[in-house]
Image 1 (cartoon, rainbow over the protein chains, first blue to last red):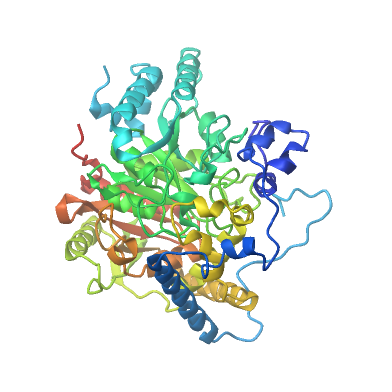
Image 2 (image 1 turned 45 degrees about the horizontal axis):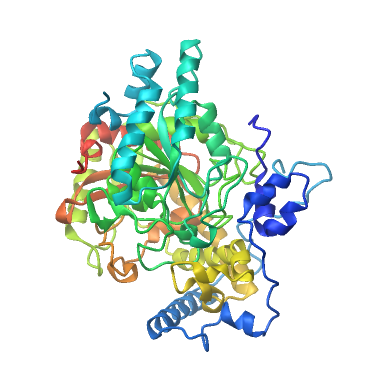
Length: 111
Length: 467
């Protein structure tokens, strides 16, 4: 692991999430190429027409076959949720992950 | 002139010749690049062919050998990397049209480790867009087009590591890296007649790999034999400070002579009366189980714990993927994906509450505990892989693969390793496979069993009828 260009997974994810604008502001300016250099439009405000276009199919001119597939997938999610909600668990049973506080200066990779 | 036989040879044979300087890494890389140029376009195996990188790395491998520096069994061995692994200077498209020009200036840890082991990167293998994280119904949901199966290009390779499967099956690389969130290594292994290893979650670093689901993603090899998978896993496994979920569990993959008197395997049958399942696949699986019995393995029919594994896996993956690909929704580029429903996944999954997600995590814990109890009684599980052969390219996958995947759900939800092995042919002489799954960090045992099976059979040596 001697490659000086290697980035931690957290750093990698940060770059992806930040997109080109934030990456260009970092000292490692070349990392701006992490994502295609394209201006990102402002996020649509919740409830705005832009928000409706991405994420909600009604009124978005979706072809009937796609609308039907969306309905099918929604029904499958709802069926899964019914199964999970009906599944009995002991009160206070633990989830399959463990939260651990991170000490200052401690590498995130070695909890 | 390098023969086609050599392009289909295993790592041990190639490595022996390379180390003895009877085979030039440069000539080997050139031969693969020539074959890629001839065959890959019809199969959509590679999204990016890295000829210059490959020849540079091959020349370095050759000069190191001449200087007496040998980096191990992968020295000079050409491979392909799934196009969601960051590679400095090469595009990394994640299989998605809106990201087709994406590039990173660093390598994923697995790519670095393979380079340090002397392996030669031929290019980036095509894949289903976003590894299927936002769903897909058709094989063509990829910037590269549909993954076409070398055994019959009118049929699919499986996904999401579609190009990795096609490349190895067509003799375009000695091995390839794939990833699995749920099924993406085992599926192309089954459909393309390959040996694929899904490692234990955390066994292999995911640093520099696209995130589909933080708690489900694994990186592993697709190759022609269990022996080859062992070589590759040996090079890429181990803790990595760049990936906080990578495990510090020691990597011990030395082949061991199996003491069958002490081994007990659970034979988990699947219901082949369900829609979409094919009797030819069941017959091939039954024959594989018989071979393992003849080899000395005690197989006892058993049932896996009855918990809603598919449901919890589906809910957790859906929510993790929506978070991982949030930017595509924020900038609207999700609408440029091939799957028309991808843009509507937030709506499709809107009924999932925070409490539902936490409950899924709590059931996941119970499932882990039940599987730990299960493995107190059995060393491994032997079970079919996919219950039908590769569907046709134009098929609606929800119709042609309608059956559930309870073993895959449990295995991936619990982060368990599995080895996919070819075991024959089904309809239209398409490959069929089965799997051996084990407790966490049992890859060595799975590979030992895989090698025992492959010493007794020749399915892994079959080649598709390509010219």
